[in-house]
Amino acid sequence: MSYPTPTPDQVAFFQRHGWLVVQDAIPQADLDLIETHCQRLIDEKESLAYDWAWDARESKDERTFRIIQSRPHFVWPEIEDQPFRKWLAMFGSGLMNLQMEFWYDQFLGKPPGKSVPTYWHQDEGYWGRNLDDKGITCWIPLHDVDATNGCMHFIDGGHRQGVLTHHLVDGVQSDLLTCEVDEADMVVCPLSRGDVTFHHSKTPHMTTANTGDAYRKALANHMQAVGAGGEGDHYPWKVKVNQHTGDRSRPGEGA
Image 1 (cartoon, rainbow, N blue to C red):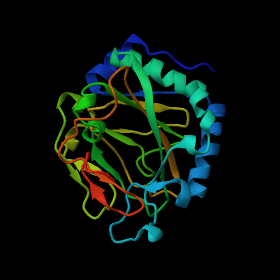
Image 2: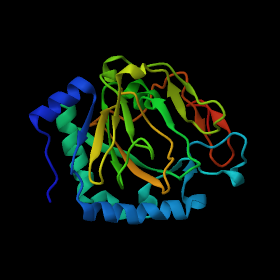
Image 3: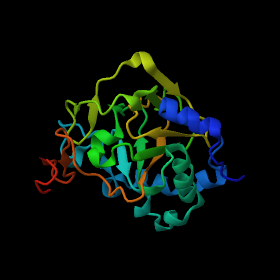
């Protein structure tokens, strides 16, 4: 199986809607390899991961890891040379009509029964004005997903609404942000293993809590326009959280 290239219809759909499902994008053998390495991030989460939904009532040592957040390269430096990494930038460039490059990834694991939603947000809400219309994300689930175990939900056409006001999620010690959206335009995207989604950095999106009986495992891959320079010129709601201490600061204020 070869990796697909974006068709004119897919490009037009993405530019109109701000999101896209690509079916049978990742070969099963490549997913097996990704999943094998990401499983270690779950097994050794206390030393290799953060809790992106750290309950403010819990100490660091008592965190229940409601959303495991980590980076595969911690256990798999060879990920940089994997075929899917090169494909991401090619496909994303076609959708954005910009030369895109891989920026960073996040493994996001949701345990069964005790996870929480990844609430409505826009990636640019985290990244800042520096990435204004210059970012795209590919979300790769490592198994079948639907609304019961945490699939993607998008606000259709939401990338044309500008950056919405975000705020911290009540009761969460980490930097999890959320924004208010009109769910009348919500699209739910169940996927089979091998399918992926792409979304524009201004597209509001969320994933539900995992109410299934096994871990929800997904790899989010963020790309930026070549020369964009990464995140910066942050919005006033942006905070940084030291996951060792729980201390919060604004960008530029230190750790």
